[in-house]
Image (tube, rainbow, N blue to C red):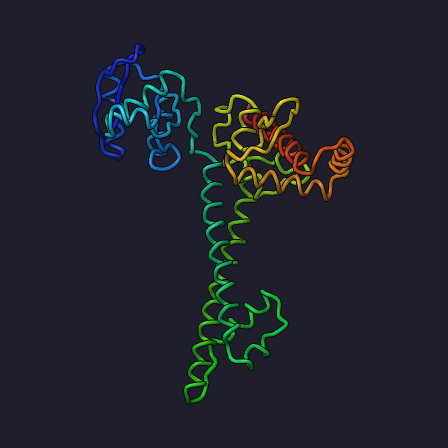
Amino acid sequence: MAAVLSRLGAVMDTRSFPSTALGYRELWEWAGQLGTVRRAGVEGSGSYGAALSRYLLACRVEVFEVSRPDRSVRRRRGKSDPVDAQEAARAVLSGRVQSRAKAGDGPVQCARLFKLAKDSAVKARTQAINQLKAVLITADPALREELSGLKTMALVHACAQFEDWQGGDGQSDAMGQATRVTLCLLAQRIEGLTRQMRDLEKRLAGLVERHFPQLLIPVGIGPDSAATLLITMGDNPERLRSEASFAALCGVSPVEYSSGLQRRHRLNRGGDRRANAALYRIVQSRLRFDAGTRRYYERRIAEGKTRREIIRCLKRYAAREVFHLVRTAAA
């Protein structure tokens, strides 16, 4: 559902189009008949509206990410697709929406897909390992003693060899065979997911080294953290107006937490939490291996700052560093 507004906010027309390549062309032709389209607001520009956002960006339209309408508008005007489309257009026209959509058509989009598959494999692998250990807890004592003392990957490798095991007759042997078959299947699943993880890690590392090698130079930034931060920035980092906007997007911008004569700042609990976690890993690595970061930490501790406040400052600095490295390369 699309709505076109004039510069003065008058609704020129509202129409529905199919979410297909032909529908996008029809939408563009219809909007072009009503005037010159310069800006557009798309709800869900990173999910259901990603293809439409890419199409409009290719047509040299400035695309903004629009959230759902305010509840006050829904109480006053009701809920319908035409009303939502008109409110999205008004949000862009009034300037209430300032977050530009990601391009999603370059190496960062490839990194996002690789990272999605990798995170899914990590989650499934962890679940399979927990299931394997849970099955082993209820197994026959002889089997537990046979596998006792093995570390996780050695245990997985040993369980993967149970495929050809044949037990004797009887209920106990049947239970033992079922246990070994289950352990074998879980172990083989873990090994397959491990291979997928390593392959995806190599692809992510190669992509970052090829397109953004400058990110791997500073201490503490590895391929995985670099890919996470790049995904937050998108293929068009120029959409971020300043390094402060990127810090806010990562949830590391200081939030004032003052009362009376006390002037303090607290951690920002908003923003992209994956990017925030990546910056936290970078800071923790620098606190261990970077002498300059350790000196800064000791100096701030002597000034009376808490560890949480110091980490917030270091994450803010890391966000500034990453932003300028990417923007300089893009320029």
